[in-house]
Length: 459
Ligand code: NAP
Image (tube, rainbow, N blue to C red; front, side):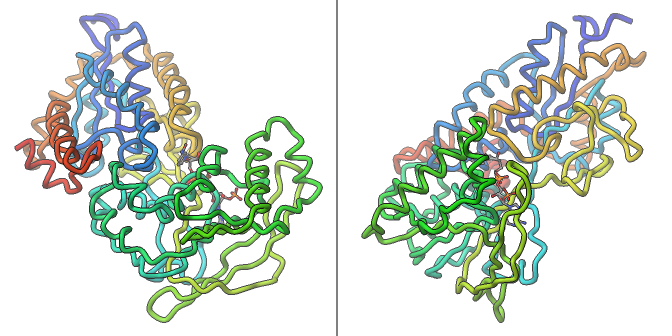
């Protein structure tokens, strides 16, 4: 048998998922110097994961990596199998039979829970649902958000909270030339929201926004950012944190908050209030969210390790709309071990581990499902290179006597199960239709928001 990774015996890898970490793993494999064949398996007919379905429509620059992913996808070593759900249409064991290795790059598709009473009352939503809805994700396009409320609350102070806040606070004119889904734009146009409260459980020095994203919230056409100056009196530990150069993003955030605290409240139609040191403890309402009970916190612990502790002091805030934006979480795939506590696939440097912490040969992980939902799109490049390096180091162990058929082994299985595999060429047709639909509206694209519509294009 020829050496694995040679012309005669290419290394066949299945990658599950098609977001940034999946494409960076593909790129690393293609550049490895070995002869490889990569089959990327995606649940939706459209590739690019979070870049298509998570990045906010008004941040088109953050979608530019798609141009790089498109180049990677045009490599002869690459095959896209869209509209295929691993664990449903095809089993992990079947992938193991068809490939030398499988890399899971399936991201973090759901949200962490707050674990408080009333969390699931109508009117209380996850950021995932809202982000998916305004981005035209087929799973969320039919969600209904009642924007007839005047007060909306966002729990959490990370960049996803910033995205949700901007979309709720911007005018239609600020959004209408983006690729926001038309159903979302129509609902946002009728929004009655006047106040958005963005609530952090820790202080202004610990908010997780990046500077650009935070600054933007003070530059909206018809929404003013408001901070209570009293909230900017920091404890000694927070002052020490900000004095540490490593925390320059946090220090810049506090400067931005200070600017907002020192300027008069604007005459703008909407206000966005940043609140700190408060945790939601209960959501109240008869059949719909009506009030939120918040508990005042204080910070405890050493600098850089301060945690929020409840003081027992509570207040109520009337609100009919709430978004929980407290971090994403991976979802299990049948046949793959899952770390329930952290919402990731257990792994050691990208090698999947079983329940006894032993490496499972041939299975690998990368991206958010490997390390948890942190970092920006580019963070996934180094992460995927590390996983691919682990895989390549294992190459002698992956070599098997039996040749691997890759996608050729999957197509008959998928067809016999009634599946319709969407190729990259098919996706390019869907892409062209979306771009065409966007043109009359001055939008970069008008997304197709159901799987049926997408399949009709390629039928
Ligand atoms: P994140 O940055 O981890 O922020 C989560 C927020 O939720 C934090 O403020 C956290 O507070 C808070 N939180 C967690 N558990 C809580 C609880 N039980 N009660 C109250 N608050 C709680 O997560 P994210 O906003 O979902 O973003 C995920 C990643 O995507 C981040 O790396 C982010 O930078 C990235 N992203 C980037 C962009 C961009 O570049 N434009 C856009 C969107 C997302 P603590 O700090 O106290 O834990």
